[in-house]
Image (cartoon, rainbow, N blue to C red):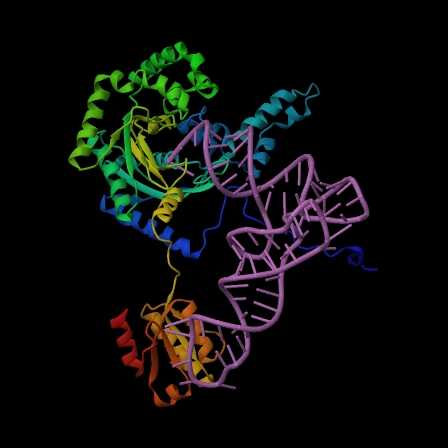
Length: 464
RNA sequence: GUGGGAGUAGCUCAGCUGGUAGAGCGUCGGUCUGUGGCACCGAAUGUCGCGGGUUCGAUCCCCGUCUCCCACCCCA
């Protein structure tokens, strides 16, 4: 008896993309490519070069830069443990420790845990930390300052999926590192994103800016704000009450209708910036005006990541539901130093590519089918050989060519050509092959003409 | 993580108060072995999201679970 006989035929399990991840398919990917090509083109005109950093980084890198208390690090990170780390953890424990009769298990466990932790990696939730790490690792401070870099790629955050929010999502971002903290740098970074959005004809673009001060003035303001919030604590909702302790700034952008009146009376950071920050903020605004960039000062705009200081900004667009920010950014002087590098000025932004695409789709027309330039309708073995040669030559000239793998009646072939959105059908049958004259049909109006092989290529080059 | 809504063919959906499924579109074939879009005819495809329960019997009722959508939260 074979053991297989007893087994029931099991249908293979159906797989699906895991929660919060998705496939991007052809007509839509054309739009993604257009967006990415435009980014590369615009950013390079501003002197930015592309950097590609790993998707996996030491967990500690994100914890330090983004902040241990932020939701992103605290509960939204996907972590990965290297198997080798486990081996290392075990090997690093001296044999006598293992053998100790009293068995100081706690010590053994602690050593193992620490080494294991050193081997812990995280899927990047954003890329600024990685770019800073790379800046330090490759000694980019010795490059002509400032160093201007951009990147694009997938990021990961374990959040509950929603419109415009995915667990694997895509960001296009840029960072300016080193050199000065001149307000013109802030303004130029913003100008670059706005130029990019402009080029894409993104609709309903709204730029909000604010300054959230520095290590000197912000803590003082936060304390003042906290004190004021405590006075009105009982009139706030549970979320805001919690935030009084965890992050008072966040109360400012509460969406609760009932809290709006109270928030309007709260002290504003613009009135509490130190001399240097106030001057910087004023200059950034001036620089934006000089560049003809419209902005809205938003004193309630705060950023969630620990490393931001002074200039912060956010850009929203239409058609996005409640996750309507397509770009967020700000200045982060001191981050590089925090990660073990030299004191370095820095500013950057990140664009949510998924949201950008969503907005483009909502306001614009859906991308058309890919289409073909030439559909080759052939019949007969001799024609097949000719068709293969024709396809090769046309493709070499850059045309998008569809060459059917099996013989089709001309009626069916033309039908296929039509469905694929082809512009021309090249008809190759016995007549064409023996005459040496190929028939080219224009699908749009049904007209057709005969050409010799070289003439046809020339004709098409002129047309397309 | 919290609250609400939804999962039936590739897509959009129908399915009366329980009797194991249909339409339109699309796909493929035919009418049509030298000419497409139209029309007509025909065909294929469903573990009715998954698991369990109630029942003689469940797409329908109950419980659980997964996924998506909307909002909160958070952020791009």
